[in-house]
Each structure stands twice: as structure tokens, then as C-alpha cells.
Length: 538
Image (cartoon, rainbow, N blue to C red; front, side, top):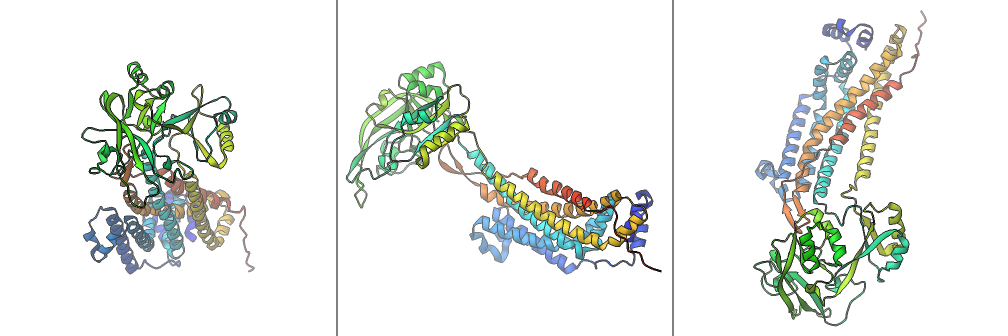
């Protein structure tokens, strides 16, 4: 390590390449990288990349050769196998990569240049540490990229449950929720029941509803080209099943909710013109995603026999099938929240729903001035409900994996710091004599701290950069199968999307930049004021 002494005492502009090589000549260094190991690493990395890309469909299955049978497995499984092979192959490339780092380090400042060359010349010591950092960061990058992409897809598919800042209360116990009890638990708040058509009581009853046949009321929007039985799906059992007919009503795809709110309560939730508001008060139906100013609406009942072992005839009775005034709402996530997830809505006194049974499906809780419901009020209501209810405020999409991501970053950062600082400590232990010589020749503690910090920084930075580069390949690949099969929450149908890709740059920068800086600071802080010097008697 005599070159370290020279570099510390001689300005960088006077320390040429030949001087360093000449001083270090004869020093014990690692042998040249094994070319066979390098070739094996290249082949494994290439095979892992092919497996990963084939798992996403970027490459055809014929590219796998004899491994084509793996394509029949889950794409996530195939990508994971490819990622493991890719990372293992990359680890075998570390010795040769360290040699390249040593050559490229000639353009760095003195301390960093010498640290890079030290990594390259002593690969037997530095390669395991760099490989450990590379593997940890690659695995973290792989996982975080897939998680971030999946989270972004969930954000895009998120649909609010109600208006922003408002809360929705759901009760699941056998006893109905008492309005007076809610008022006592939430003084100063406006608590309103969400009234909907009852539909089949077996869908929400706490206990068995009947031990004999009974009739279920229905109300359906009948799209053009559809019959009333087709709007009931498999209930009526008549005609061919048509997905396009199940767009709105008590038996439609999705929630099957039909709101029947008082006119003032309904219009408060909707952003309608004065003319449309007047039509709703007069009995017009509000249609989510509808078109035109009229809509065909049918209502009636059908037979259900809970005691039958075989399907029974529904005995469908259509009591009303007519064209009624309609107000169309654009099919947006915001309007879905306005309608509390329903597909149809009526003013409670609308003649179209006269005679149909209703029930309180949930409750809305809001502040009179429109501000968000306080957390304290939510806690009081939840305590009054106990385990038989749940209340949730609409705060928009919220990530539920922040704690997991934070824990992963903390654990992996700590792991990388331990590896880097351990390797740096071993390096400094080998340089103990040189450190003492530097101190004896007048080198300040700052000089020796810069050298130790550079040693830790270069080791961590090289491992982190390589790890991010390797981990992004399977991370980008796994994002496609995770996010290709999507779900349209407004049409309640599965959709094929080109996929979502989100690279968590902030998290990766935390590992790739902040961790090397912290490692350098800790290594510098570990340098003592005056190294011990052993005096030899002459």
C-alpha cells in the first residue's frame, strides 16, 4: 500500500500513472479474472434474460429451445426463475467488472481513483463484498419495481366509495343501526341513511330468510336489443345470456344497487343543471353511463325456492315495463362515488319505484360545512358499532404498502452497510502499517478519513449501481404479467391492458446514493486521531 502514502503526500497533478504502477510493482495482488467463469456468467445472464423476456411475451417461446415447456407455467413463475438465473450469472461477472472499474477509475479524483484500483487489484477481498451488495440490491430492485407497478395499477382502478371527506358506515350485525345511537356517537355530524331497493334478502340477511319459496322484487334498465329476462342474467333462465344486457339494476353486474334517496339528498350529491335537477324531482331516473333523455325500465318479481335441490322455474312476473324520463351521468370514477357505487338512482317519491320495497343499505356521515369528517368522530362511531360495523372516510387512493416498503428499504440498507463496513474494516486493518506511516509523515486525520471514506463509498456505489442495473431487467419484465390483466371497475369487466411500468426511482436512489454516502461517513468517523505506531528497537 505504499502507493497510498505517495498519493496522500504528493498532489494528484504530480502523481502519474507510471509512478503508481512502478510503486505497486511487486505487491501481492489477485490473479487475473478466470475467463471460463466469465464466459459461464455471460451465458447464465443471457439465459436468465431470455427466460425473463419469454415470461413476459416479449420473446416467442421458440427462443427457449428445450425449455419451451416452461411457458405453460405461470408467467410470474417463469420471470422469477429467469431473474434468479440472471442474478447468479451476474455474480460470476463481478471479478471482470471490478477490473473494468479499476481502469475507468483513472478519471476520478485521487482518493476515489486509488480506491477503485484497490478494488480491482484485490478482487479476492472485494469481489465477495461487491457480489453480496449486487445480489441484495438486485433483489430489492426486482421486488420494488413489480410492487410499484402493481400499486400504480391499483391506483388507476380505484373508485371512490362516496364524496371526498365524507364517510360511509356499513353495519353487518343482526340488529339494524339506530339513528339516535349514531347521533349520540357523532354529535354535530349529519348522518343520513342510504336507502336502496331491497332485492333478494338472502344477499344481505344475517340469518336464513325463509324455509319456503318466496318472491324477489327486481328493477332493471333494459338496453336496446335486450329483453327483460336477459337483464336478470341467470335468474330468469330464459334466452341467451347477454353481458350487454346486465348494465344497471338490481341484477346487473357489479353492486346491483339502485338508490332511492330523498330528492334533496340525491341532488346534493349530483352536479346537475337546474333543468336536470327539476327532471329528477319530477321522477326521472339517473343512469350511470346512460345516453339520451329517456330509458326503458322494467320491474316485477320472480320466484326463489331455497328448499329446492334443483333449479326451479322463476315464474317471472313483469309488473311494469315502460319508457321513463332519464338523466344520464358520464361513466366516471367521480360519478360512481356520487352514486355510492349504484348504477341507477331515483328520488324517493318517483312513481317508477312506487310499491317496491326498500332498505337502509348503509349510512353516510358528513360535516355540515363540507369539511372532512374528523378522525376523532370516526373513532367514536367505530367504538359504538364494535365488531358489527365499519366506517371509512373517503380520502382517495391510499397505498397500504408504505410500511412494507419502508421496512424493506431499512433492512436492505442495513444489510448493505454491514457488508460494506465489514469489508472496509478488513481493508483498513491490512493498511494499518500504512496508516501509521502516513500519520508519522504528517498526514492529518482528515486525509486518512478521506481515504477510508473513499474506500467504503466506491465499494458500496459499485455494488449498488450494478445491482440496480441487473435488478431492473426482471423488474421491468415482471411488471407486465402483473398488470396486463386489468379490471374496469365502472363496467365490472376484465380488460386486457398493455401493462403498467413504474420504476421506483426515489427508493432506488435511497439505496444507490444515500447508502454509499452513509457508509463513507461511518467509515470516516471510524478513523482514530493517532494510529498506534510500533517502534522497532535498533
